[in-house]
Length: 131
Image (tube, rainbow, N blue to C red; front, side, top):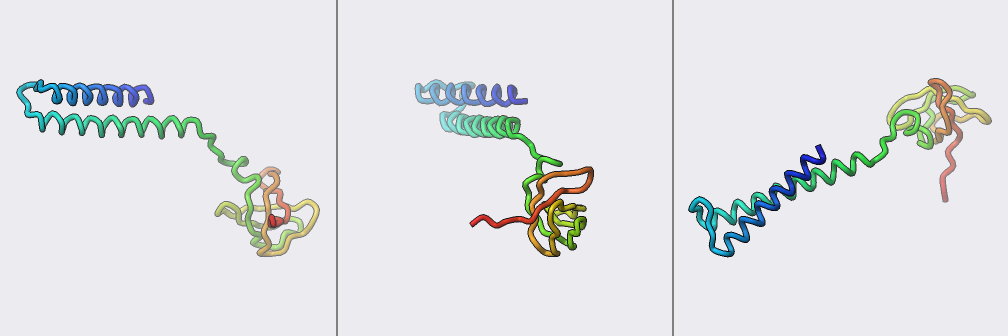
């Protein structure tokens, strides 16, 4: 797909350049008016720019590392929905999860930070605000 977009952008740009150059030299294709040739060249330049932009976004998305699942949750902050003594429920990344805390109890509505995952339980600790 990326190669096709690059090809389309190149062809559109080349034809547009040819049309503009020919129009400036006074050459017309198929007895078309110079205004029509310039209009076609502008349209082709716009298409080339659109194809180049789509190519850029496609390559950028391809290189971007997707974070989902466990990788997206670890390090995220949330809030305790119930008391965690040591297990309970938290809300993190807009979802409710069962959580467990290792060293301390966490009260309801306190901020928590996800530090790991054990099965379907998130391992959390109290979230310390950075000053």
